[in-house]
Length: 136
Image (cartoon, rainbow, N blue to C red; front, side, top):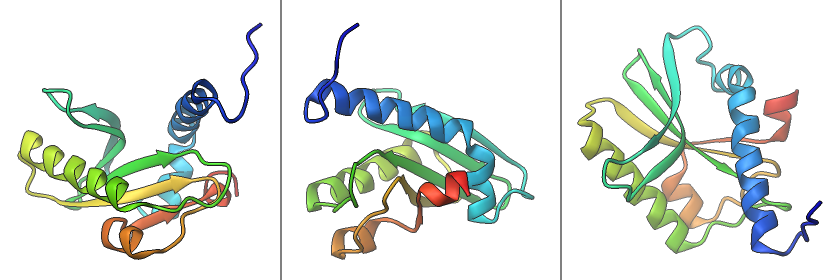
């Protein structure tokens, strides 16, 4: 069996994919934490038609709101950089344009240890969920 080292890109990629799958398995807890478990909604992942943008999980709600969830596996508290914040904003605009939605669209960060609330985080992310929100 192939061994993964924590600092290798293959480990980080595998960990990120596993964390995204874990979020889908715990979507009820995510919705409960967001306070939307009683609102009719659909959850799915999304890739733009031209493959320029990908959303880990979309929660499309019947209350005129869409949450774009970014599942970020990181072994410590995540610190968002300007370029990453710009990528999240670009992804949101591509989603809005491609889907032609008129709903309010918010970016929600899901991570194990949370994210530092620096200027890039504050200008990009509307909600944050952490490990305790997934597992109680």
